[in-house]
Length: 322
Image (tube, rainbow, N blue to C red; front, top):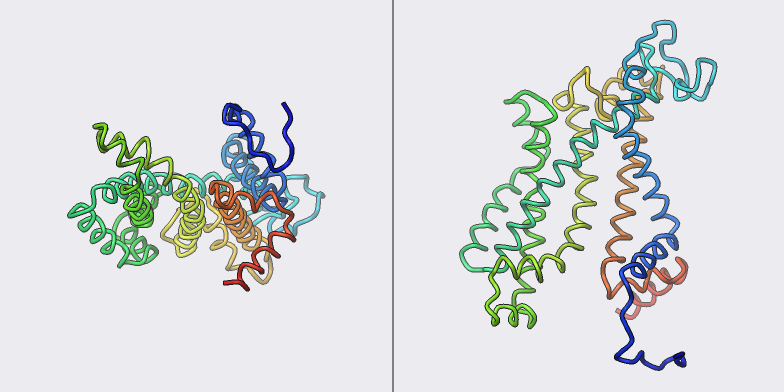
C-alpha cells in the first residue's frame, strides 16, 4: 500500500533486502565521480599486479641495446615502448606493470598483518580495560617512539634487504596505529547497553567482541587501513630509492625512480613515470578512503546522496554555525 510523503513506514513493513543494500552502495559510488575514478585506477593497478608478471615478465627484463633511452609517446618500436625505454633498452611500460606487483606484494601484506594483529589486540585491550589496556598502550608508545622509516632503515641495514623483511618491519611498525584506534572504539562500546545485555546473558568476552564490537569498529579500521596503505607504499618506495629496499633483478616503483635519477636530465621519463604511478595510486586510495568513511557511517551517509556542490555548501554552512 502506498503512503504519502512524510508518513512513517509501518512497523510490519519488511526491511531492505541485502540485494537492495548492495544496489544502494553501488548507487552511492556511481554518484561520486572521483570515487569511481579512484576505484577504476586501483582495479587497473591490481589487475596489472596480478597479470603483469605472467603477460609482460619477459618483456620487462629483455634488453635491447639498440633502443636505449627511447623517448615516450612513440609507436615506432611497437606498443610496448609507448612510454619509452630505460638505459638498457627495456620497455618502461612493461617494467611499470610488473613493478606494480612487487610494490603491492609488499604494501598489501604489511597492511593486512598490522590490521589483523593491531585490531584484535586493541579490541581485547579496550574491552577489558585495566592493566591490559595500560600495558598495551605502553607497548604501542614504545613502538611509535621510533619513526617507521628510521626503524626500517636500521633493521634492513642489519639484516639483508628483502621483500619479506620489508613486510615484517613495516607490519610491526604500523601495529600501534590500529591498536590505538581499535582500543579507543572498543573502550567506548564496552559500556553500551547492548554490550551490557550480552554480558548479562552470560556471553563470553571474545563472543561479544566478535559479534558486537568488531562490526562497529571495522568501518573505522577500514578507513585507517586504506590511508595506511598509502603510507606503507610510500615507505617501501623510499626504502627502495635509498637502496635498502627491493633489490635488482626484482623491480618496484621506488627502485625504478632510483635507477632513473642518474639520467634525469637526458631521460626524464625513466624516473617520472614510476613516480607518477606512486602519486596516482596513493591519491586514488586516499579518495576511496574518504568516500568509504562517509559510506560506512550511517550518520554521514546522506551526504553522498547530495550533489557535490550542495555537499560543499552544507559543509560551509555547518562550519559557519560552529
